Amino acid sequence: MREALFFFIEENQRTKGFGVGSFPQLIVCGNYSLVKMNGYPYSAPMNSDFWNFYASSNANPILLILELIWTRLSYQINVENLWGDDLSIENFAPFLSAKIKTVGDLAGWEYKYTPISEDTLKERAAAGEWSPTIVSSAQFVIFNRLCNGAEESIDDKSLREYIEKEGEDFDHFIESLTSTGLIALKDDKLQLTTYECQCVILPDGRFAVADNNSGRLTRWINKQIEQNKA
Image (tube, rainbow, N blue to C red; front, side):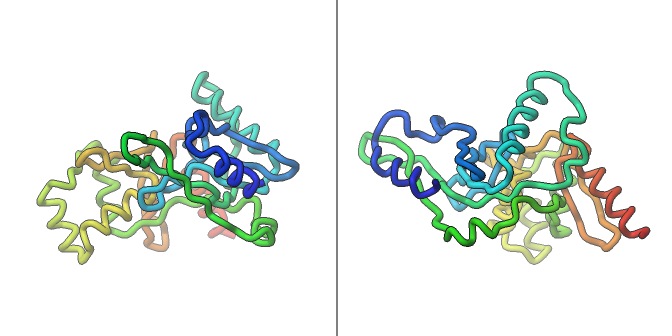
């Protein structure tokens, strides 16, 4: 299914209606699916200047359909408790990435296909356990400041001095923040991409951050506490 769609796109280069915005949210074929990673509800990090906008899954397609419907309902009307504990997360295999490309006076999408063997795709676990993003102490400080409403500009000399004092390369550090998917760089400012980002220090001393707008982070922490009691 992955290869068939890719070859179909290749055969229709420079054809209207084949831009990223025209791809359907979900394509189902038997027990396999292709899913749009546009944050509604699934998303994927950038790969350099390419956006990983399409992925494949061997999860139950009905589950994916429900996730799409529930997400739309949660945005349009105030419906709670749709996801339960929501401590498992679907595994996706990268499929298509894209970036805007200009050739002469023409602008369009350049696509890149990620080939994965059929055996690997079949053997992938359909889902795994959700966990928050583990960050370094320096990253944790920046997340905390953003969560508390502070502004962070990459042109701020004090920010650069702090990062370099922590022994980090500044450009690599900024890239490590945005690669979490929880922070974006807009113009020269770092901004949270979450609804309710929260930061926690785990009992083992690690630093964790996650969007807790659905209470998922709280439930995950409570589960860790209960497991440690056992």
